[in-house]
Length: 281
Ligand code: FAD
Image 1 (cartoon, rainbow, N blue to C red):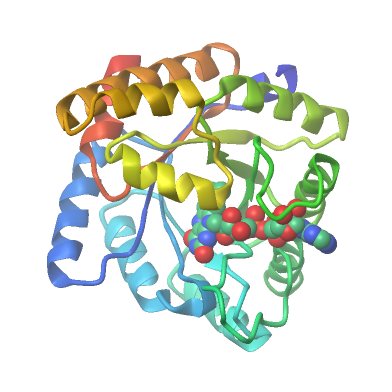
Image 2 (cartoon, rainbow, N blue to C red):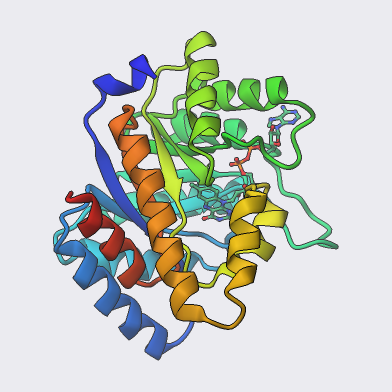
């Protein structure tokens, strides 16, 4: 963990772009509440194939115009090089300098996978076409990406993104702090030297999150699943226990040298800000 301790801590919150006017208003209330915590930045996800491009941009500009740093995500799967260039130009023209670059996932059965296959190619493309304009974050996976052939291959894939010019990384969420610490040691051994900020999923709707976790390769420990099941329909207890677990996880990560936290908020301010307050940040 030594290499991570030298980076200044970065706290950030992630949103998805809302579809309706009501969702836009709700998201505004959410980020206005979270802005009081003075995070380093907010980020807004991007649908595969550019399906949310305008909504992502609008949400980012709304946040940015209030004076906070806001980073749009961009993904390459299902997009042509022309589409990607146009998105980058749009981000540049709006004065955005911070992005999160991903491969993305296509819905199953989609025919065209696009011109870039992996996120390292996207990072190379962004650097080749826009130089140092953007601060680029990429994704990484302490519990290994579900499509990776091996732990070794996944680490090499992450290294290629950093070698291509990524400035920092945000992890997939996890509940096992040791997986993160081991991952950081493996990255150090490979000479990966960028801040690797843990992605944190506050537990709000446990069973929905557990289903999603099976798809994205985040492991829900058996003891946690069993404990949550024991609460049945008692959502208050599920949330309260979830807050305890995730606060303890964050506390351990920070006390052992993690360079900040990135919260997957699901567009809700409550759980992330409660964890923040409990951590005394
Ligand atoms: P990559 O780094 O390309 O890796 C994908 C897989 O390919 C891995 O298994 C890797 O090991 C493997 N791989 C890489 N290179 C090679 C190679 N040369 N040969 C063989 N295998 C290789 N998705 C969205 O659609 N929109 C978003 O806004 C979004 N935001 C996210 C934010 C964060 C912080 C995280 C962690 C994920 C996000 N995702 C988003 C999900 C992400 O798109 C998926 O996890 C996707 O499956 C992988 O994206 P990646 O950028 O990590 O891909």
